[in-house]
Image 1 (cartoon, rainbow, N blue to C red):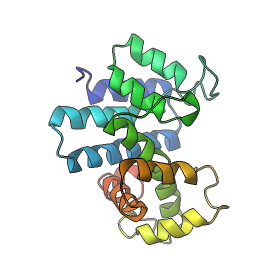
Image 2: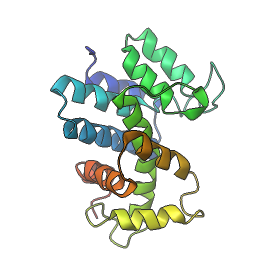
Image 3: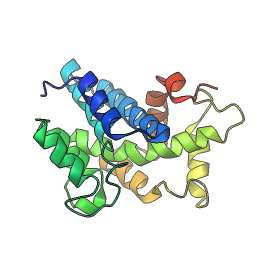
Image 4: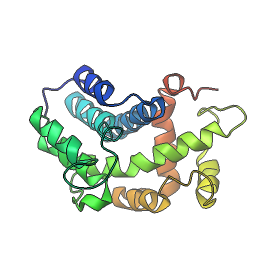
Length: 194
């Protein structure tokens, strides 16, 4: 467990990240992580840990976007988190969310972070092109349709989304529904409530 709080993690995120879209992505991933942790009936401290992991998974990206060890994302962030005393399981999950680090995803937290990261981006993009711009009316079917359109949200790695659902052992449609449900909890904060 960690003695780190969400407030400390949030302060760290805001110290390194100023882009509104990256901040909203961090909140989306945090919310999806917390949703999955509650679904797994984890203890409150574990739910907090999963949330912090989601919140901080890309905190270094804006300053260190180049994925070249040891100076890029997530290597630099991993070192910063180690220096600040964040636990190994948080840092391993964050390293594991980037395939190019070759960090195995052995914990459920690490598998979940990888599974929700790219999907949160795709769900956001799919919501923004809806006439009502609302997560509350978005369906997994609609997201799957957008997922098939390779020209739509080109930056979202579809293969990572598929691998993530497989690693979780969850049907892709159900996984999309789960992420949408998690993000709906903070739809107003994300500007996606319609």
